[in-house]
Image (cartoon, rainbow, N blue to C red; front, top):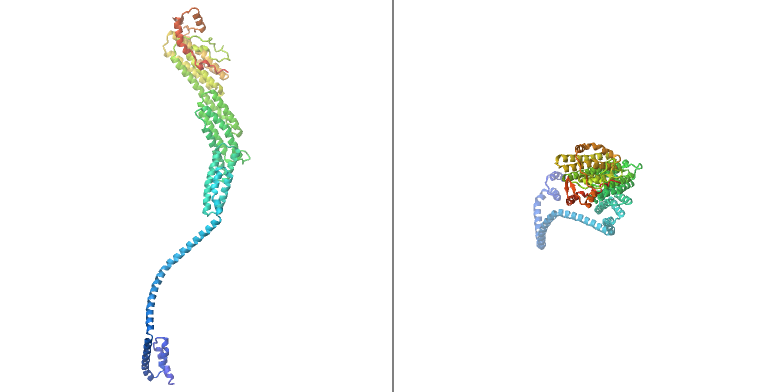
Length: 572
């Protein structure tokens, strides 16, 4: 019980003692089991043990001092090395992110290099195929230059298929871009071919090529075809010489007669997709509008160039060619003969008016400068209008005694000669009015001349003789000429004789004066041969030498021009 009591008493004490560690617990437990005496002796025992241990340690230290020194040195070195390692570890920790990024970069570059290497290996394995592909643009360009359009379009279709299959390959896309440029060159060359002189088979081939290219839709294709053909026609017309209106119109009419007919037929053959035969049903009237544009341009050119033609025969030839051209184009629905008469009527009217004005102006000039001296009679006396042969429209030779009238009649003959080859019936009354206008202007000029000029008696008699010749010879001759150009036209001019009442009254008032008789060449010759009888000029007796001198001075006025020699060209 006693032994248990201390244990029981020590148990709570043990729980109250602060222990340094669990290793001291056995010793504490042992102390608690000692008696009080034993506890009093324990310090001494501990001191003895400590001393003993100290002596042992000294002995060990003395005996192993070298090991201790080495251990101390080693410890010091280890401490230094550990600090150095610690510093290096810190720098290593700082460089680890850079190493990581460097490794990532290396890994990435290595992947790219591997990809390039694989691509190079693939390129090397397909070198010949790639070389063939890269030569496609050059080969296509060669085909285009040599006219091998089928092969060029096959290459273009092949490259387009490759571009569709490999839209992300730069080589294929670059190849497609080069091929597109060559295709544009091909397109320009094909359109240029359409602007040249080609026939229907070639046109069909070119349109087939354009459809394979696929640049234009159907409407644009038709429009482009007509534009190119129009450019070709315009080029032909531009090559013609516009300085010669007659030759230019001939060339233009021949061009439209042949080529416009061909273009319309080519269009209908190439784009024949309507069984009704009416272009309006499927192209919006494109061909119709284009053809009307060409016909309108043709008519505008005629209207502009016809007034430049100064010969009636040339006008007649142009009219015949226009009619033939319109009749030929009528096979394709472009008969424009009904539009021609107004153009030629206007040109004929202008030409006739111009010639009549020239005749009147020349008459006025000659009248103003005329010297009133008697001239020898030429031929037979002029017959009256009623007695004149209907088949003979040669100007009466008696007009040569009156140079102003001869010049005027020559001008009228020129106007009639230019009118006769191309005399529109619709202008019958208008041209009659123009002729009457010219005759009335001559009549007015004569009356004005009589009023404004002071003539001596002999000059007045010669002037009245000219007026009588105008009424009795020149006017009937003009009536006869116009009647030969237009059946029944003589009546239109003859009805206008009342416009010359002024001259008629002048002649009536002067009828009491004796008009000088013309001296005939035969009589003058007979007198000269039978004794050189004296001549009379204006009532004055002249010697033979004076008469010859007078006739020599007036001889240039008696010699007619080419038109005066043949003023009757209007006769058939």
